[in-house]
Amino acid sequence: MNSIANTKNCYGCGVCAAVCPYKIITLTLDEDGFYQPEIVIPEKCIGCGLCLSVCAYANNDLSLEKPEKIEAYAAWSSDEGVRRKCSSGGIGFELGKQLVENGYKACGVRYNVEKTQAEHFIASTAEEFIPAIGSKYIQSYTLDAFLRFNKNEKYLVTGTPCQIDSLRRYFRLKKMEDSVVLMDFFCHSVPSMLMWQKYLKQVEKITGKVTYASWRNKQTGWHDSWAMDIDGEKNVFNSRLSQDDEFYKMFLGDYCSNPACKDACKYKYKSSSADIRIGDLWGKTYQNDEKGVSALVAFTKKGNEIIKAMINCTLIEQPFEVVAEGQMKRNVKKAYVSFVVMRMIKSKRDFSFVWWKMIFKIEGILCLPIRIIKKIRK
Image 1 (tube, one colour):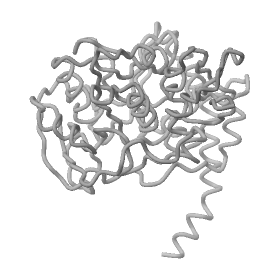
Image 2 (image 1 turned 180 degrees about the vertical axis):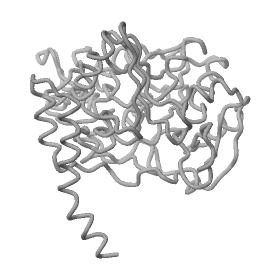
Image 3 (image 1 turned 180 degrees about the horizontal axis):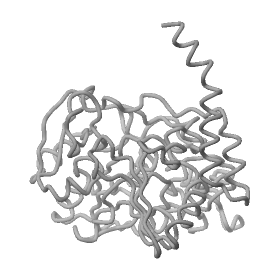
Image 4 (image 1 turned 135 degrees about the vertical axis):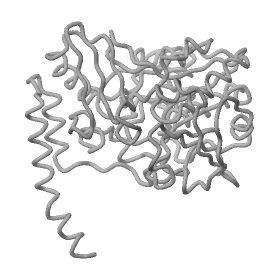
């Protein structure tokens, strides 16, 4: 059948569900904790193929042609409060704020404490867009927001590169491409939601029911900003990657990444279907800056015009290689003990921080021979 019925291990962007004329596609978490599309009323499917036509996973090419020239900038907000609160330089929020003030609606990602999930939402004012501040290193649920796109409105949409690739196909099909600005970011991967839920379960033994969760803060400086700040009804929980935080070790160690991130990601480094890409400007140029600097890249003329028109920001033109220094050029790879991690995550047993630390040690022992071989080769 000409549909996503047999699609497995895809990006989970949900654009297929948004485009379906009969609205019979939904997003559900699969057994490994990743969002996947499902046709819930198969007998109503007419095989029109629209779901496949917008699917970035089903199409090998990007929806945007490779740009002749890429414009790149180091950037940060002139508002010290915004810069301090955001993960890097605050440019993502400043872009959203400025476009909203110019008649756009802003579609970004917030964390829903009650549902323990990141989710896309649509903001009509700068104040409504504030929950989009800060990185959320889990897969977002998109469907509620994507179903609300209206032909009579203009949008800034921020998402992972694969979400944005599908969305450009969607907006092009709907003849809305000129009314939207698409923004992605330098993406590592998305981890299993089951891992996040196991992590929260352990944290709640300390905090009680979680009332607030935040990824990344710069209280100890931008270069030590991989942080988890979680408030609960009884206590607070603060942890950092520099203190061996288990979530970040799992996430950045690629122990439970989406299979599509490993096998089918085509969006690393210069590859994008967005108008604008943002991220942290890691590297030597700003290594002494602890306030945060945003990487800001324009892949289209529209994107660069919007960047050039920004106010209340500092923009410094830089070579792309400087702006993208420290960003991934290849897909994530499966960790040696990832199959053990996934089995433990899927089990009903309590997955304590003690177990997590043991897994990291086992991985280190297994990787030791490879590190020795690499050292000898040098």
